[in-house]
Image 1 (cartoon, rainbow over the protein chains, first blue to last red):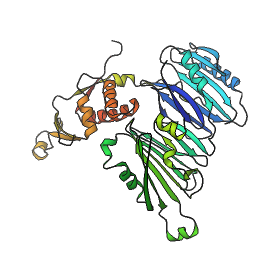
Image 2 (cartoon, rainbow over the protein chains, first blue to last red; image 1 turned 135 degrees about the horizontal axis):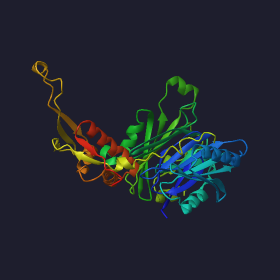
Image 3 (cartoon, helix red, strand yellow; image 1 turned 180 degrees about the vertical axis):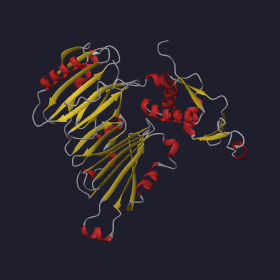
Image 4 (tube, one colour; image 1 turned 30 degrees about the horizontal axis):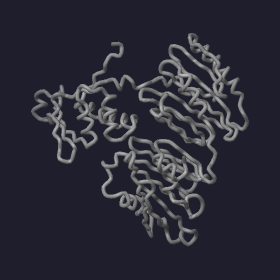
Length: 296
Length: 129
């Protein structure tokens, strides 16, 4: 059996073989889809849809089975039950998939997992993945996300607004959609020797200096990770400053000695809530840091 | 989940692309520069319309110069007429601490650009053999 990697997305946790990568993702809280692939093809779809009450999944399955029988008369369709999930095993010339669904009450979500098999179906892998799917409720005032090499805790008051994934660059931006504050940005940047000129503290200061005044720099070392931190007040017009307390920006960045990537967490808020915690303590790059900051 | 999107349609895989072998243009001249980048000169095909008397007036360049950054230079070095794209991607990923798909997209972009500029051609192997 392959080594398994944990994915936490939209308050659902799932384990998958560690050579699968998430190539498509949805941000929507009510409905969405993530797709994972091995090096050769798509292997798994994770779909979710919010319902007020448990939908009639058996009927949906039966309708789908009937449609498949019409569209693919040669396909063999067999109902299956695995680890509390019910679904269909579909085998045919053009289709070789297993489709499972289950309603999760706490999140009021119907989750559907589709395995796409390149060759023979793997019942052990099916069971291991399905058994690993669980709801991941908030950790007090934060919600945990784990994807694209980042293990992070975003404030409960913000939702995922943007996610950028490119070679050597993953960014997840959280906010409340209406206002630019609060914002929480988590980044993981690769190919560091190719673009980092100077030190990490210098880079971090350069990232924030145009937006922030009264910059204070500090640093700490956690399990071999030299974490540079900056803190300051967001630049605002004098009128705005008179009306409201100016927002604060806190950021932390470091280069992980294990994977050589640069990690950065930046939080902007008005000094309340979870963002007041040191941003460097809300993003983990590797197991040693994760155990230290309590995301494991 | 009424909309049965794509799952069954997503049979598309990129295996055939990974099996392809990038072949260097033998006429392309690569010159490594001091900072790890590379200058390449690729001869241009003479345009068909370039016949007298047009050729007496128009004198287009006979070659195209490409400057590759350090990553692009590395991809060019890995394309040795032996490795297929998957092996190039694996080597690129290992050298730069990237995941397979990060390296596939990055190296794939360089290979595509080099093909567009005539520095590389691609040999598609027949999977049935």
